[in-house]
Amino acid sequence: MFLAKLNAERGRFSSRKKMDVVLRVLRGDDLDLVSREAGITAAKGSEWRDQFVASGQAGLKSRDADGRDDDVARLKALVGDLTMRLELSREAVQRLRGGVPLATGRSTR
Image 1 (spheres, rainbow, N blue to C red):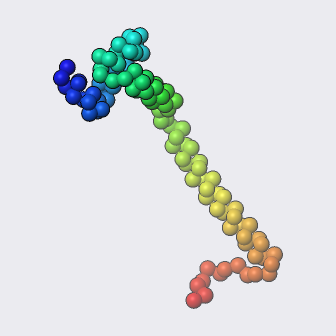
Image 2 (tube, rainbow, N blue to C red):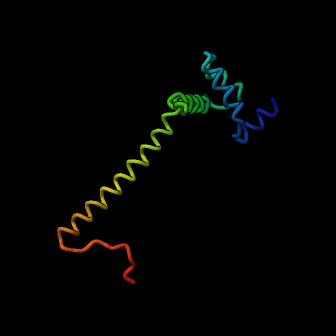
Image 3 (cartoon, helix red, strand yellow):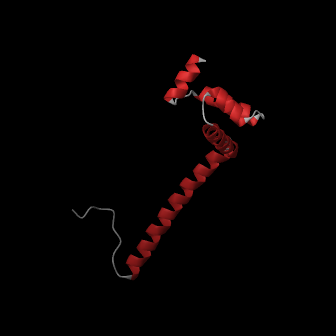
């Protein structure tokens, strides 16, 4: 109990201690009672609960990587390459229409 009191005075709690408080509240224990026993305010206990739930919600939104991720990366690279080629082709057409010769591949320096 002395250590909990010391931590409360410093305002520092381990993530494990915070999780224990939050889980007790989520399981139905009274927030005021749990907070008092932990040496924190009910507002702090409520804050921890809200943070815990928000993080849990984010974890549920993520999905595991699968084979589609490799396909998506490969197709994005292909789209990028084709887009670059299209832009170069459009530039070449514009230059030819304007009477400007295309580069011969040799340096003019």
